[in-house]
Length: 66
Image (cartoon, rainbow, N blue to C red; front, side, top):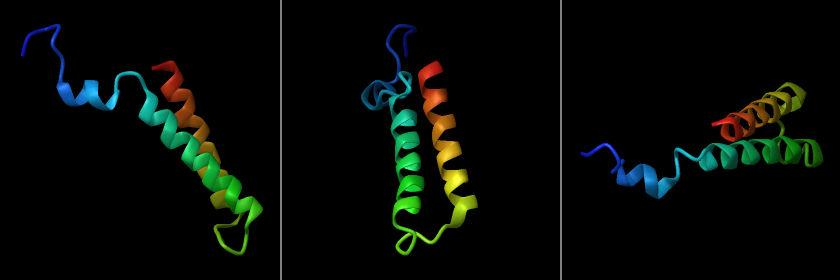
């Protein structure tokens, strides 16, 4: 593979841009918020909500700085 060519799968999935990481972060933040809004459907507790939201924020930050 030549230097400027790159992997076609990487170009297809936009891995270098950080978009999938940001999307996963938003999904984790949304899961944490749903745990707050619907505690009977998502019984993950306060610690679980903080873990989901915190890791989601970290992934969004990681995707933006990439």
